[in-house]
Length: 619
Image 1 (cartoon, rainbow, N blue to C red):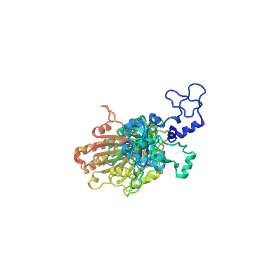
Image 2: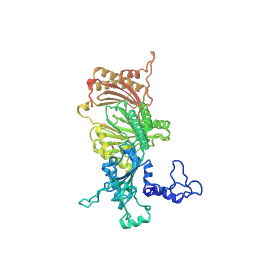
Image 3: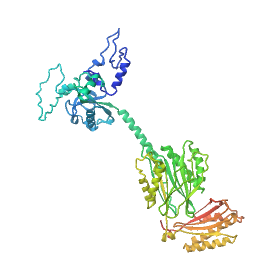
Image 4: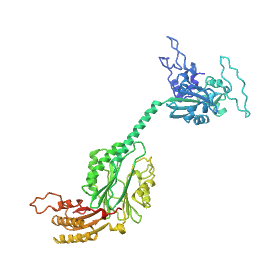
């Protein structure tokens, strides 16, 4: 037997044989460690050429190659041959023993069913990078081999005297006798000459015997294993590095998100963040809740395009900037205008989508501005879902766009949902279909904001291996009745006339605070703050003027609006000054104060007092 009869059946050998046929070698160029040419022409001078590959014993070649080689035959895959590399890796294997018993490493790797498939289909099969019991990784190729049918029952001729053995008796079912170890070992040296797989003898054999030549039997499988431990370890190191990068990105992402959501007096809020499940798929999704004072609340959700630590870092910068701009108490579109310029400065190649909204319980509406983000969904008390439409501008970082604000009703009993595209976007469906499915889920979602949030995530099919980040922010404006309703009260007075409006405002505030049963010290502080705010508006503002008193379960809020948009500043009054102390007094006695411009022109100046524990209750 020679090596080419085996090599014709090894993967890739046919291509190499074709290349040799097209470009025959002119000489046999041998060197130290080189393989002799298979078809070299004899040279005219010099030492005689070495033996061709056809003249080398196959066993000698297979024993010397570094790859692991084993030959099995029959339905129970009895061992016919293993080379020295295989023996060095897994130890000696007795010829003639079935693979299930004598090749436990193949059973541990799950290759025994693969051997059956190769025998049935007469097609090679390959499994890549399997870790063997010896701790190394191998790529296994199992190739069907045509064995001599006549050699199944007898060993090949040998010059050594045969060992006498008793003739094997067939069993009662007529099964051929089990080959002896000597017979199995002889298979590797007794294969006949084989034509190429598409040669004439194979064609004749297929016609006569259904796939194998008449003198051959496709009952053998050659197991060829290549050591790929270095590649497997490098791949594992790469995967470990990617997992570490992902953990770093997730940790950074979560640390930049709010660790605890602010809970305004008039809203109940819950949020969730689910990182993408694929490797290093963490993006720049974020959300935030910012109490603005005067009972107003800012809500924001955004998505930085991209993945990994860079996207999370950009997200953190934008979130910090949003909180800073929110303290200016600007309208939503002005906040987005500032963010647009900042995003371009952070990274000209990085864009982000964002929705910034403000809830004012006195107005019963949600005023918002969108920079390329998905629409807000609002479910009213009756269960009807409204999808916000315009205005929507381009994403942050694009520049050259003037954003504008819109509004949507958010009265008592309403629920609003802000979300990122990971919740509704799928590769096999249109984005509008995902939003419509979310609308249907919101229409039937009841319970607390956290329950609604979890239900929406489940209905969207978001799991731990989801391919994109998901951020959801749910806010509810609860409808309060009974005792709870008594804790949330409003009172307003139109300030008409001239200087006589000031004593009328003090009397109104005193009566309201008395009816709300506040303690005397809080009553007196509230009346004094009302007097100073009204006096400041009468002196520096223009009609129309209005006084509004509001109480929640946590605080008392006093607000005065007028038609002048000049915002007051706290300043130090000199001893000889006759004015300029009103805002300083309010800032001293109140828990907090501030001012803002109103959408229709004008301003609002407010202050708030924290209620004593005895007069407060929780939601």
